Structure formats: C-alpha cells, structure tokens
Amino acid sequence: RGYSVDLPATVDDLRAIVLQGNAAQYGQEANVAAHISADDIVRGTPYLSEIEAVWGPAPGRVQSDGRGVFILGAELGNVFIGVQPAFGYEGDPMR
Image (cartoon, rainbow, N blue to C red; front, side):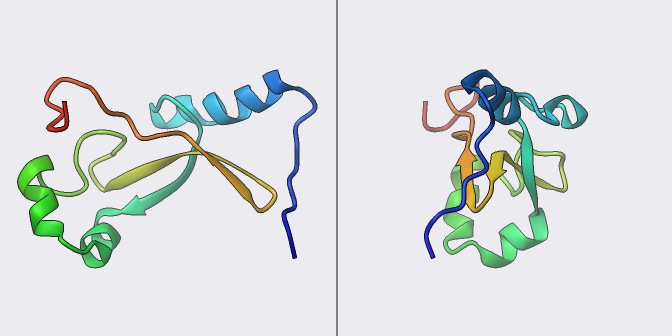
C-alpha cells in the first residue's frame, strides 16, 4: 500500500501550500485543511470535563470560529503535513 505523496516542485511551493494556502480566507495563520465541529469535539473527547476545567468550553478561542476548530496543514496525496496548534499565548494555561 505505502504512501502516495504529491510533492510540489520546490520547497518554497511546499511552504506556500502549508503556510499560506487558504489561510487568509479563514483568518488563520496557515492553510485550513479541515474544520471539526464543536459538537463532534464534545461528543468524541474523553475526559472533556477535565480539559474544559483548565482550557474553558469547547471549541475554545484559538484556531476556532466559535462553531468548531480549524486543523491547519495540507494533505499531499495520502500524507498530511500538520501545523502544530498554537500555544504560549496570553492566557494559555500551559504557559
């Protein structure tokens, strides 16, 4: 089975696909590859009450439109290149 990767021509093209892409359309810092609804997060997250006790109610305010969260990155064939979620901002409970 293996991997099927649709590589861009240059590293600069790869960088643009992952870090620019449709980011401006969604007001995000990188390409939005997917959107997960708050309902799906709430329904499918074990230990949600413990997480929300520290971070606040889902879907949160970071990488969110209030209805869900954005997954940042790009799918190239059957390989996903993800951007690590933001952290270290003002009010981050892990700070």
